[in-house]
Image 1 (cartoon, helix red, strand yellow):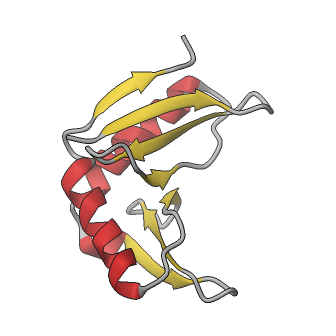
Image 2 (image 1 turned 180 degrees about the vertical axis):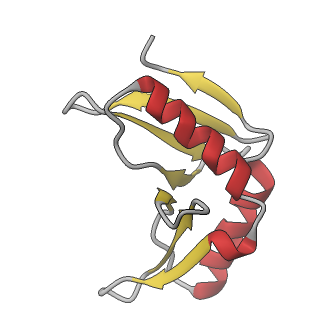
Length: 110
């Protein structure tokens, strides 16, 4: 089972990473001004992760593949790491779908 890890950035913003069961980061959030906002972001990932239409499959300028997970309103709630192939990116999406809905939350800011 995956887990969300809440951390604090050097600029004071909160963020979360979703880790797969193997400990690899598969999704990273934007920065949030408050921990409550960060927790709402996690809930949004849990809600939206199972829906394939919420994934925006992208190719970076350097040719690497990645994806954004979007909420129903179109706002980006998480971005993947960079992948070398489209298949690897698609496997990352499947990992988010599998891990996010039941992932635990670990707050490392306490």
